Image 1 (tube, rainbow, N blue to C red):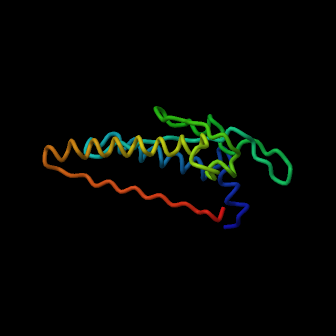
Image 2 (cartoon, rainbow, N blue to C red):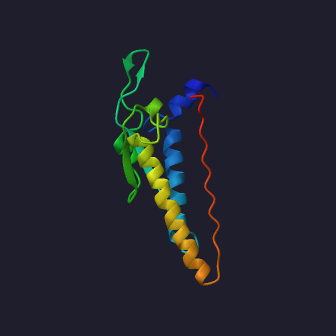
Length: 136
């Protein structure tokens, strides 16, 4: 598979992307129906600014409407283009605050659930890993 075909697979409504989306929907709905499994929390981010390649505006790669395709899923905007939406300059920039704030909220929910379960004799283990790459 070439790099060009990888990019083509990500084009809106491509056959491969339709299959990926369908399989993900089936997975999420299956988890939601199985009351023995914890609900999967999802937040989808999309970029605020268009991406430029060699000076040419190629628009937004992830638009709000494509990020918001699952029902009952929160969608949030990152003030960056697609190439920079996960490259935060500092801890105080709004994109970092949004993503890290969401993670902190989920951790607190898991810790609360773990405390509640411990009271009735079961224990959940929560492991959160974060990696930064200062070379970017």
